[in-house]
Each structure stands twice: as structure tokens, then as C-alpha cells.
Length: 107
Image (cartoon, one colour):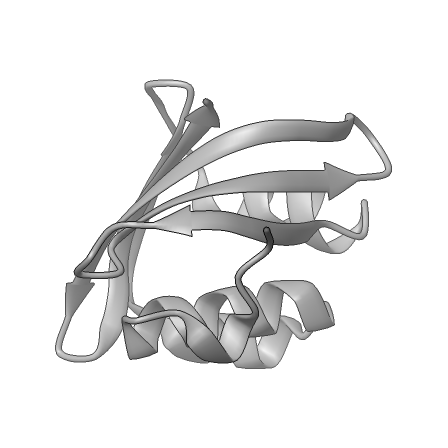
């Protein structure tokens, strides 16, 4: 059963997923802490390049299947025009109400 975005426990993660699903670059950038970082399948990636390719230009969308009690870990079905649908895990570090780092990969 999919968890709706408004039911995600951590406000910064809720804002991240909401902006991602809306394809809203400005809102997405606003939820990231200055100097935010990310990794994909265990390798650090350039955040701007990765988000452009994997989210915005490929119409990325996340359907959350489960979340940890603190809301900082998600398992989701991630869909985009490049890769189709895949089961993914997402881990977030939140600093001052903003996402300072996220790590994603196949679940």
C-alpha cells in the first residue's frame, strides 16, 4: 500500500518527495541545505547533474511503500522516463529542517 506524501513523518522528507513528484525544481532546491550531497548505489554523485538527469528531465516520480519510524528512511517505487520503474531505498540526513544528504539505490 502506498503512503501518501502528506503522511510522511519527517517534514523535510515530505517536502523533498512533494517537490520531486511535482517536478518543481525551485521548491526542490529550497528544501536542500547549502552544500547538500547525495549518493546513488553507494557512489557519491554531483547533486545538480544527478537531479537533472534522474528527476527533472526524465519526469521522476516516487511512490512510497514504507518509511522508518523517524521518517528518514523510505522504500519506494521510483519511476522515470529513462529507467522505468524500480524498487529503491532512500536515506536522508536532515540539518536545520533541510535535507543535507540523501542516499538512494536499488532496494
